[in-house]
Length: 420
Length: 83
Image 1 (tube, helix red, strand yellow):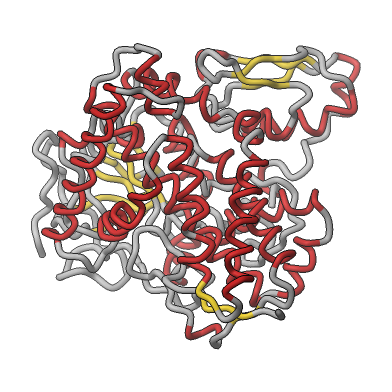
Image 2 (cartoon, rainbow over the protein chains, first blue to last red):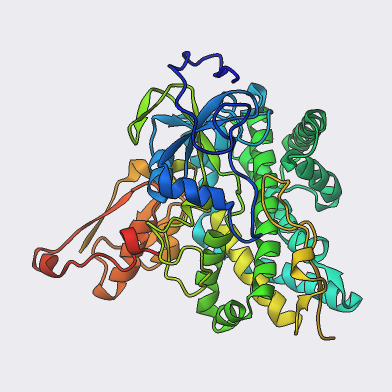
């Protein structure tokens, strides 16, 4: 059994907890279960853990040990508890050896704690309010219409990932931030490598560095000539943001702004193509689309390996001592399928009333761009099925390549056809 | 029913405006919650309760009218049945 290797700042943990009764990693506690039996469901093992073990010991690829929480109530409680830090420099990742470097941290809100987090969040939030994002609907509709027109002009079949689901949120976030859309091939490639679990450490670091350099150059250019988009506006507002912070904000919003929505669009489309009854309910009225989007977010929960927190002090959780410095993995997919909170949790029901799903997280870090994601999903999914009549998969459903190998779940390709 | 907002807790996620746009807004300054009314009309009750429930930072709370306490049933879909 490998000895626990806590982060340097953490005290040595007490005697290791008894190994959980599941497949162990080299004799120690198990790794986070990641193997899905069904492409639409989280790993079944997560459900067993949630039913039987409220908190369980986990091994991480970097050799450290920590904890796993799977229940909705617990996940929300930890995400709202300031005894846990969002820091990802000292945290272990459940799926890879690499974590964040300290120099990556400025501007990356998701790995910051108050008061630094509060300062940046309050600078950014006015640009992402619910009404402001809803006000972008006409522009999103225009972008969606352009991509549908191009699809119809080229005719079936088509792969919706490069033709629809990826470019739409990419163009929207580029316009919002002021990132040249012409650079998309580069940042799509960097982003895909950074999120890949099969890329080598060297490849991941090289792509991270490339993204850092790219955004630093862009921030330099905006300093010289600030435009009216977000990065330029933040510079003109003269709020003492450093170049490193602006670059971090730019990287975070660029990646988070297109990868998440792109994958929800593609996976949501695949879901509807395989559940005609749910598609019909979704299309039944404009009001139905809003709740359908919420249910897709809950049911599909694409942040598939959860999020992590690090204990800032010793904390007792369900009778176990989480030691200062230990990483706690919060399984968002497991929490969103918790039968203690949701009726028929494994059933997709787009007519479900508003639910307290944690697809966007919970607490102070709940997704800054969630209202934009909602607008994009509602408009793009509605227009797609209206605009391409008879839309269907062009391959058997079980041949659609799923993103098991990426930090953000979804599909790699989505081959479809429709009636011309 | 009176709505109370604990401003210091607000991070501007916007859930309240999403669920009850006639009762809540967000500030242009820092995106935090603005109450359009502290005493929303009865027809807004379900929306306001949804906003309270969805807030990720427990910013909002409700002060029930005294004569309403008797009929203060749990909000639809709350706690163990929110699915």
